[in-house]
Image (cartoon, rainbow, N blue to C red; front, side, top):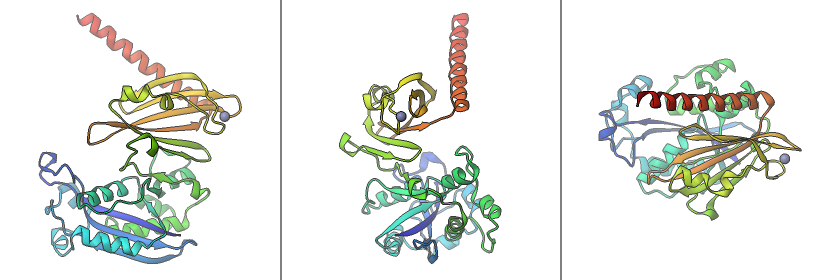
Length: 320
Ligand SMILES: [Zn+2]
């Protein structure tokens, strides 16, 4: 199996969200990729500029970032032509690797816009930025930039950044040099396409956590009433756990709970709500082991939020 390290550049409507096409808010203007074999040798590179169909003018922030402009875009080819060529170049047996979680989502959004054949569902990939953060920094909450990691790993900088072909190449060089322990366990699943019914729901079991991607519901409340979502089970032994901290609203898109398994210790459940274009909601639920410090932090967070709510209620009462 080969690794396709892919990077995209995209443009947005230069005159703001009100004028953008709702089916394609992010229009891809370049596909870049580097192919590695099973032994992580670089065996080929790919790069193509795409002539935009919707947004011919670069949005100002994107223009500042990119090292090319509209003149080059005009020499590009249409998305569907480039995509078919790229797909063929990828071959049959490969795994996508990206720097960050967005590229495959935007790629599929563009594919849908042109009614191109979808990727196999569910789409697994390696988010090398996240894997680097876990294996090198021991922390998933701080995602390092591509430039920073290239510098940290002493990779020679001989081509400009912010061009998809070069960024894919730099990402591939990082992939070669980085710690890849437990790589095969560290795949992500892209959420652009999601389960539409119970049969399509996905449970992926990892060494240190499990992930459950549900079908869609009409509301967050309806989702939290679902037994499979609300029940906390240990990701190691599948035992149903009694909760030490019940589900609480951490922010508008996440809820958290903690339980205890007698064999495997403190287990944290996290529900992330994802909203679809049709106004429905599906859930990505992760279950993982946490330590005492993390447990205390969650407990403090819950108390803080509770106190804040109380205070707000009191203020309302005083005002009326
Ligand atoms: Zn257990």
